[in-house]
Length: 350
Image (cartoon, rainbow, N blue to C red; front, side):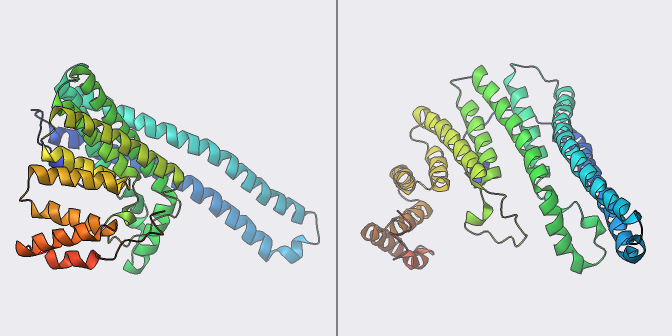
């Protein structure tokens, strides 16, 4: 689910001439508009916090003088009024920001309609519009760290400003990408409705769910993750985990449909294995890798993955058999496999 294979290694394809350069000309100004939305919210916060800071500074430096008159009460009333006015307007601007993001998504789709000469019910048009939405969502990746980057004149400030930017805007970038990927899912669903028995339709919808589930998965749980950038502690809470599981299960359903049409296609079983791994369903993942080995008995990489799973699930005898097979075949990763021996933790499995 989180691997690029799900989107790149499909054995099926739909012939479309995707006008990537023209779509890019739509994405770039859309990115600028999205950045402008975030900056307007930043300016709103800066204005009020600067005003409050000035008021509090004035009160602090004139406390002795103000204590001798009713002006102290007036000064504190102004501070309280500013705070109340700020939080009232903040709710309004937050709601307005969400509406502007939705309008931006709709404007982007309308612009794509013109470039693609979009017509509902034409399979190629649904695929190209879904690809455009996915490209826009991909272009937004990492933008939550970049809003304050232009303010960093010294490299020592960059990590702090990236963290501040992410703290302020990760949910906005996440929500915008979610809107676009949901639109991509919707287009692929329309494609399935147009061609319900066509393999490419279900491949596209499955991959759309894969991309959407990738938005919800915590990257720190993925093997090989080495990005040191700060991640908000509440970014992948229980609500997001629930969405991840839901989208993953929908992707699995599509892959199961593909399995019905192409039961001997290793690619389909590989996607199911990736999905089951993300859903932490090791028994089902093992079954899929075993099926792939029946279809491709000489695939040493699949055998290695299966051996690792055996060890991780406490099936040491099966794991050792795989290890011996790889060693006899002089597979380069055979020795690294034995390091997973004893990795099974029965307490964590409960």
